[in-house]
Length: 298
Image (cartoon, rainbow, N blue to C red; front, side, top):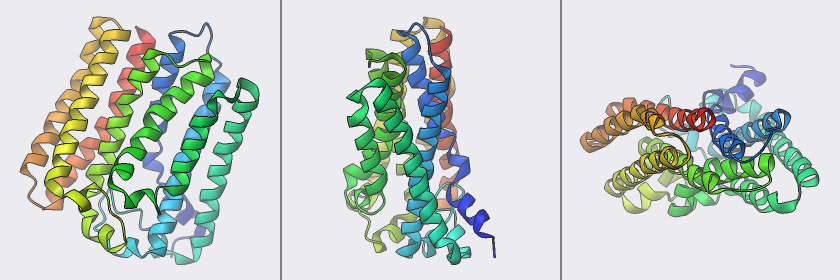
């Protein structure tokens, strides 16, 4: 049996924690376009808060999935179905939920620091983010549109515009537009990762888009969001960078095409979808990273 420490670490889902810093990068780039100076200590604190929020969601989700026995019924892949840590070590359950709460408190503490030092304009962003963390697994997952948009809103507008607001004191057109890129990408990331677990999620009382409207609708929504992510990336590069940086969207374009083809060929065989799920993770990471770097360097 794994140790409690190993189980706690696994439920944090470390491979997925690199996602939050990509959104912070995009928000920092937006702030740099108007701020005379970027406070790197504040950037570090924002990043810690974002990663802690991600850890909290992951751990509380693992806790809930174990309590509802969803973890016992999922078709686990490298990208979906949970870590499998708690079924291997149920004795660590209390440590996991405690860790999730502590991670949330770290995020809230940093948020309160920025509220007291930079003004209360951040309150709405912070409260909405905390509400999503606390309600995502047990409540938002019962409503298809809420379940679809909540992850994207968290990693997109909330993180990007929140970062810009802290660092520059305002939200610009650049922050608003570029925040849409991770919105569409992260919502698509969670959507595609739900394909293997439709039956298990239904049995656990969830009611996300694939359960309510079916796989064909899910495919179409993925295509729409994928194109929207690409178009907002191109628009961001065109509006806020020099034309040469449009080339940084080429890897994302190729990956989207590959994933679209895999979805067109998908016939219910999850094993054949796993490579596309991996490509989707890469797409979700490299697109905001290249966008943020292009905006900072242009």
